[in-house]
Amino acid sequence: MAADHVDDASPDAADEAVQRLYTPAMLAELLGVSVAVIRRWERRGALRPVRVTQRLSHFDFSEVAVAQRLKQLLGAGCSLHVIDRRLAEISRLLPGVERPLADPRVVVEGRRLFLRLGDELAEPGGQLLFDFDERQLEDDASESPATIAITAAHRHGADESLESLVDRLQQEAIDWEDEGQLDRAAEAYRTMLMAAGPRAEMHFALADVLYRANDLAAARERYYAALEVDEDYVEARASLGCVLAEMGDLELAAATFTGALQYHPDFADVHYHLANALDRLGMPEEAVRHFEKFLELAPESPWAEAARDRLAAEHHPDQGKPSEGSGSSLGVLDSSLRSE
Image (cartoon, rainbow, N blue to C red; front, side, top):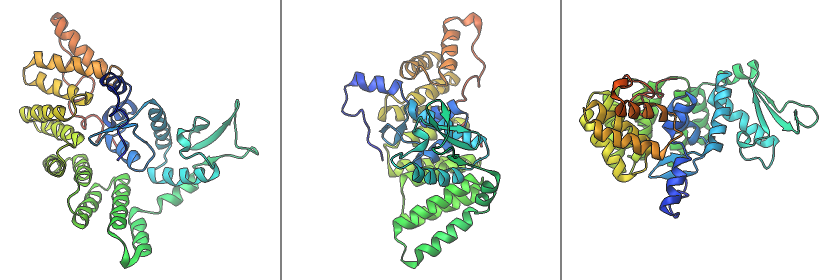
């Protein structure tokens, strides 16, 4: 897990840092992709959090730029698996550039990546830096997650270590997710848990897959399982609260959000979703307090406009409150995790 870069700073510095950062849910909302995609990019090292608090990642604006480039490639028809392979090759072409998409000289144009040289987009010698052409995409698409897993198993053989097995199964699960084969991804995560024993991050990943498969009850239980292993896992608490809210258990959802804030008082997402839950429970004064705290912590959040509209409606009741569902939906998961 990455180090929390503001733990040793003053409270004021920590507050200032939080306001400049995006959680996975905020970044997903900003880009219009699923939270699952953001987490996969982070697991693969394409995105790197600058701050991690009790397993909750925070990304700065430079990582937003990287995520936007990744989204451009996805929108052009490149799978995450293809992008991973191509970026690895580009890194070999650009020694000293550890993360090509984080380098401002690298420009995304459709399926192509160019190196900016002054005012020109070119590779030394006039050659294209990289082209995600149709033939390459078709060749890569033919290598299914099952093929990848079988190849890895043959390579490692019977002497495969536990951690190597876990790494292989995790890659297999991610590949199945990329293919939209959520049942198979869930089985891969379950196999990981059987092989390695209970690990909070595995329960959490399985819960996300189950949620995307619309199995809310199973997702809820896996989020509970993650918290049984690690009670400090605040993102699991936030996601659990969202699932509970979607299932109609608003009082339990509000209690879960409140518990998350006891572990991480500056978790802006949770203030926003707790405010919505309190609103729906008929507790407007408490809701306003959390909307205000949310805006204090994350004034540039994709959900900030919805929060301001709600506060304006509270101060000017003759204008009416925003309709339920305006802006982001209640859950951290609702607005984006099923969008793939």
